[in-house]
Picture 1: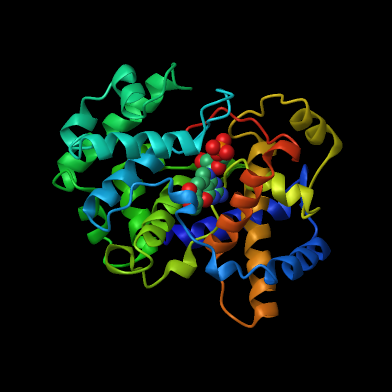
Picture 2: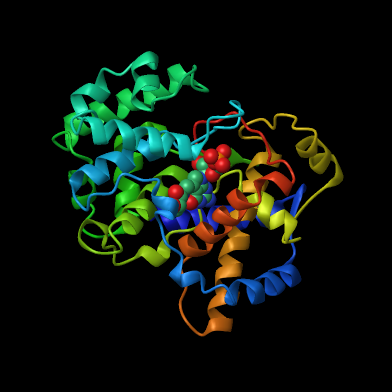
Length: 312
Ligand SMILES: Nc1nc2c(c(CN[C@H]3C=C[C@H](O)[C@@H]3O)cn2[C@@H]2O[C@H](COP(=O)(O)O)[C@@H](O)[C@H]2O)c(=O)[nH]1
């Protein structure tokens, strides 16, 4: 199975059936005009230097652990992605061996809190520690402890890397069942590929001959931006539940429709921008631009949907 084709096909089907979320194509074209003026293809990966990035295999080890933990920050009003990235970076700068696979394989909640240099209990701390152990044991058993070997095994294919990550590391298997059909999102597996591509600027360990096959990364911040731009519309009941910060059940029709519509809307946005600027643009570049916009405008944007999950 081509996992990236499966993401596109299954999410398009969800949007076709959706009852709670719709995509507004007129708003997509208006947004594409705005985005086209923003030179999206030049968006950089390591915004304000928050990442550990040394151009070598340790950067891949850092990114794989980062993306194994890149989910569900919102239950802790302070802890967020930037703290996770900067904490891991600070630990690596102190001790280059801190992400060795044997250490990860033995990681518990307290050790993880120290590794990310956070002062209080992490949201979902024990579950996060279990996912760290899964990364350590999987790397030891199949990739000589090195995430760089996992990337090398993909022979410069993004789709093959997503296949390998989801085959060897169950925590990355971001899929569900919607109206009796399996739906694939693979957000953390895909964002890992995108981060490797970004960190290595598409060269060496970061060169993928099918990087354009990645979709956007179905998180909880980009949908907020798409709603502000009237691209995504939630029905009244869902809009009220999101506004009131009520938890939306993982695997519920509402959650799956939000994520699937976000993926399809960004695909359509990418096509529209590419037409306007007469140049190819990657879904991940549109994604990074939208995500950064969401981060920069956090204080005035509507609340995001709240789903307690390990996938995003
Ligand atoms: N769609 C998408 N979702 C992303 C990222 C990133 C960071 N990407 C790096 C790549 C380039 C930049 O340099 C960034 O450093 C995090 N997230 C997700 O956001 C969510 C909110 O988290 P927060 O605000 O902390 O609570 C959470 O689900 C988190 O998983 C991204 O790029 N795209």
